[in-house]
Structures are given as structure tokens and as C-alpha cells.
Length: 444
Figure 1: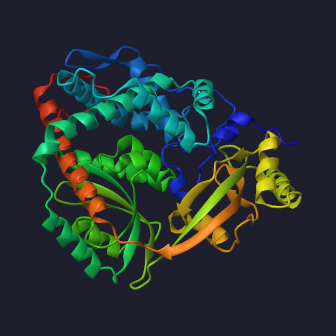
Figure 2 (figure 1 turned 60 degrees about the vertical axis):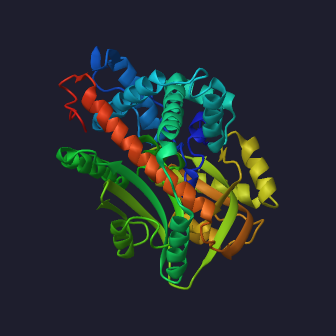
Figure 3 (figure 1 turned 120 degrees about the vertical axis):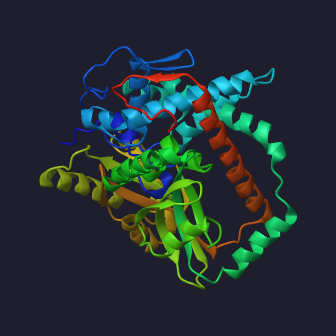
């Protein structure tokens, strides 16, 4: 008999490739998910009279661990991330203080805008707002922690754009030069890339920033989702998309990153130093010179969860047999999806359109062989036995970026530079005190 809890199934949604844009839903064990490392009560930081308590840190850490797919009951995971999370919290306090100082009468971010982003996060996980809130409550995660993080980021983005956007001039000639350069390099190799970026605002903090990047890369090596880490920690404008850049031609990133990508293998990550700081690159796929076809698929993932730890051979056989039978009794994909939703056992994602090349290799090969309307055979994946239902498949030429896209990319890059400088200056001018336990560099 299969003893599977429906709440564990929720965390399996969007488990593959670029579908984990923000939430990395994974199976969790039935034990208490609250962070269970040694209790440490009191004040952990003071930021210009704003106090960050150990309770604040614990709540934020619980959300961070959940969103990146780490087991929140693991003292090791909590200890490893606590300094990184506290650093982010300090920066957010500085951003909020600065943004509020110059806020217009209506503020930088409305309740409606904040709620819209919150609801979009739930939707990406295949949930409505009410179900998402219920799930967070079941996992002892305070939804206000996420709402506050969203509001701070919205306010800071609006403030930086309002204050510095008027100083940025991206000329038509610059855009035309960039487009011409891309066109010239179109027949070279090009890449499907995810990226995290961490600025080095002061040379004396170079080693600390590199150490931070190395810590995150070690987490990637242990299986942590790239997109979820990017959302939580990256300082790049594309962080909100999980670091997803998509297909790029040479010349769209820095020369240092171009050179590194040329020598990387598909699925490999690398740390690169450029003129502004350190980038972590993930090469999801690459196409040879002259090959410009892109396949997009519309899929639904049906998952039969089995928990965080690998199941015993007999349990795995039972779960696989269940998935095989579910596929057998279903006439087509739509019936399979309905039967899975009615089962009370399976987790079923919403339909998602994604580049086939952006999916994890073990899934990509299975889906590439399917015709629309067909379902894959069951696949054993981390935390579940999964079936992919292919609703549609289209192949088209990879388009060159438009002038508007180039302008937007350059604007975001330059606003990011102003943002980095502003945060650096705020840290230098601010009175920041942290508990010795966390040993944060004063201006890192």
C-alpha cells in the first residue's frame, strides 16, 4: 500500500530544468520541517538602529532553505547559509531605509504590486494564492517574510530606476553596433545559459565575494537548484527569472564569460571574474555553428513522490508499477492528467512551455522522442517517479534579439552598476553591527 501525503506532492511541481524559476518544490520527510539547529536567541545585527533578531533570521532561513530545496531540519544546511542570509537581510534593510527616505507620496511599491508578485510565485508552482499560503503554514514558514522580501526588491528597483535612469543614454548607434556584432557572430557556436552575478564593490572584498561564489557552487554540485539559488542570492537583473538568460550569441556577455563558455561542457558550472565581479555560469546547452533551430515543448509533469531519501528497491518498484498502470489505463495525455489529479497521490504541474534544450538531459532525451499527445514512460528522478505529458512541440529558428531587447538589457546592466555602487556606499556610511558568531565583513 502506498502511504503518500498530498502535502509532500506539492513540492515536486516544476522539479525539472528551467521550470524551477522560483520555487523548487521537492518531497520532504514527514518529520517536523522547522529549523532544528541549536537555538540562538537575541539580536544578531543592528542596521542604523533597525534590529535584526535571531527570530527574524530563523524565519528568513526557513524560507530560503525551502525555496532552494534544502531540508530545513538539517543543522548543517542552516549553519552553512546563515551568514549568507544575514548578509542579504542587512542589504535589504539598507535598501528599504534608503528607498523610504526618497519615497514619493504613493510609495515605491503598492500592496497590489506586492500581492501580484506573491500570487505569480504561487502560480509558477501550480498553486493558487490560498493553497500556497496553506502550504507555507504547514511548513512553518511565515508568508510575511516573503511578502517583505518582495516589497523591498520592488521598492529598490523603482528607486534605482527613478534616481539613475535619467543619466543613462543608450544611443541608436550603440544598439546598431551590438546587433551588427551579434549578426556577424550568428554562425558561431551559441549557448543556452543561466547566470548568477556578484559584484566586487571594493578590491579588499574580492576574496570574500569569491568565497561566497564558491560556497554556492558547492551547493550546486550537491544538487541544489540553480534557479532557486539565483533568486535568493544573485545580484544580476535576471535573478528574478532564476538567472535564466536563454540562448545567447557571443558578444552578449563579457569577453571573459564568452571565453569561459567556449570551453565548457553542457551541464557544467564555472566561476568567472570579469571587470565588475564574479559570475557563476551554467551551460544548459549549446549549438554548433550554423545550427539555429530551437524546439519548444508544452508539457505537464505528473509525479509520484517517494520522499527525500532514496526508496528501497521494493518501494521503488511499487511506485514505478503504479505510474505504469496510471499511464496504461489512461487513453491519452489529458485523461492521464485528470486521473493523476483525481488520485490524491500524484503531484501535477500546470502546463508549461519551455525550450527543450533548457531541460535536464535525462528528461530532454525522453521528451524529444515523443509525439504531441503522448506520455513518456515513468522516469526515476530525485524525490519522485515522473511521467511527462507532451501537449505540443514546435521547432523554429532561434531569433536574433530585437533592438528593444538589446536596449532593455543594456539599461538593466547599467542600472545594476548604479545599484551596486549605491549599496556599497550605503554600507560604508551606515552603522552596522553584527554578532561575532556571524563574522561578516564590514563592507562585503
